[in-house]
Image 1 (cartoon, rainbow, N blue to C red):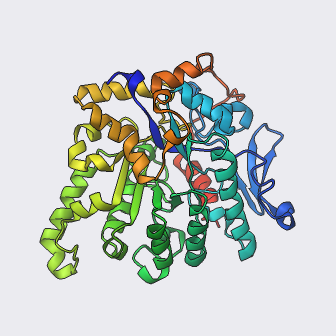
Image 2: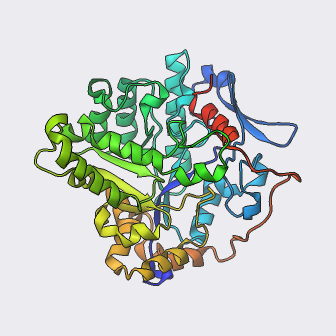
Image 3: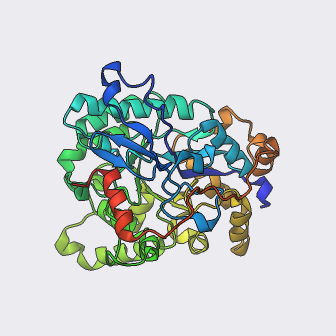
Length: 432
């Protein structure tokens, strides 16, 4: 398939939230206590909420910047592409990159919205609902057919979380971001069936996908606190290998046949070995561990419940049938440093050509699986013939996608893992 003929839907991108997101969505009585974006004397922008100051609001928002500027920068909104925080500019960037639609994870609240847990339950719930309404009505509503809506959870209360899943489902949302490991955040684990039961029921009843994103527990795989940053970056998918094992062997997988879980930004190359390992574990140990998948192998059950996603991942594409062609989606990861934007179509085509992937399988991985898993139909709003890479790029032919140096800092040094971990702790609410 030629790059221009592909249709691309990304199931993992990110928002850098604008300063006005709570306006018109949060009850007036909470306005003075709401999180706020503060422009600091040093030129940085930080989200501040009560005692929490969340640094590097644009963490990894490096789309369109040279690699020399990667790291914990940029620090201010004026150092990033407007498409990071403006939905209309985002759509222009998407079209220039040949991408029809994207699903966007939150940034400053954390993937599981732990930041919004306060000593006032009503205020906490209001923050979650305000964020979700902004995301659904303002961000996604700005350009129908271009965004897959996603809700953040009420992570600290399973009953309220279930109610919020049901509330947003009435607004057309079938995607929930969640933590990869609630136990690491001080909540009951996935194995506490009774505690999380309302959530599992709500997910299944509303046909909503639970998306567990790497790093969403605030715990990152690392060998030592003084290890180079490269170690952490290399090991990022390990969190989702752990989450996949945790969830696959958990009771909800057996009790709720309709439960759907996405392993967001975890890659796919590791999946064939993982499936071989879980089948071997079941064969050798199920007699005494008392695991029972109702006559199926764990690998078969994995394919019933789990969605994997890849950026380029040639090994995963090569072994796509070992993973399950129905269980693979593509992700762009805009505006993070792993993103292929704006050259994704050409890079994807090169991978597909290397392994002689048929057009029908390309379509499954690049857009059809995403539409099916997330109950999303962009063609209700945009004719299919206008949704291809070539058509989208032609619609914004003058849009600037050139790489430009945007940093306003003359001295730069690569962040240590310890510095990165401190930022992660603040965002996930794990910092003392």
